Amino acid sequence: MVEAQHRVSTLKLTDSLAEQALLEDLIEGTKPAIPPECRHLDFLLATPFRYGAVYPHGSRFRRAGRTSGVYYAAENPGTAVAEMAFYRLLFFAESPATPWPSDAAEYTAFSASVVTERLLDLTQEPLAANSALWTDLTNYSECQAFADAARTADADVIRYQSVRDPAKGCNLAILMCRAFSNPTPIERQTWRIRLSW
Image 1 (cartoon, rainbow, N blue to C red):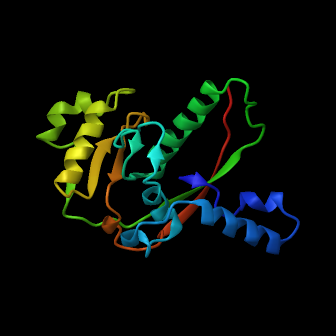
Image 2 (image 1 turned 60 degrees about the vertical axis):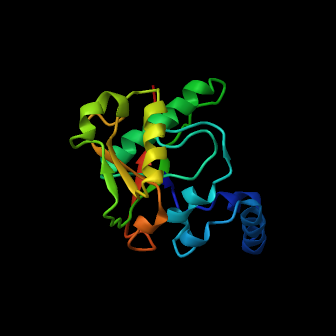
């Protein structure tokens, strides 16, 4: 789930479509290159892999620092909404001077086709025996160590339980872009989400 893809945020900064296209080209030129093995993918699928630059804060399966990208996905839209809403609320909690949005924001939920024989499933035995390590709300050190080992073992995907979804849906941490069996998103949905107290 990402910010709505039918709206181009740079459009409001320019006076014409030509200026907006030039601005988009300039912005694109400042971003790190997409790795060669991911260049066949749509930008929605390739973007997490292009940022092999210094990562300021760790995430569940990615350490802080100069580390390889991870594409995070949910197995169903409800889990994606729970994950996205948590991080939007966290942003406002950590930025108390930022005013809350007055209107609903639009997001695009999209599906991607992933096929691999190199999947590690933390929800199944024997790995599920350590579920407390994989589902800690704030300490990601064990998950990051597991992701390091998964990359060493040439795994493509880690499947794990969402800790943000009350329905306990599952997420995927895609480590290698070769796991995408289709280079473009398959289906898109528009969601309007309003945050409030």
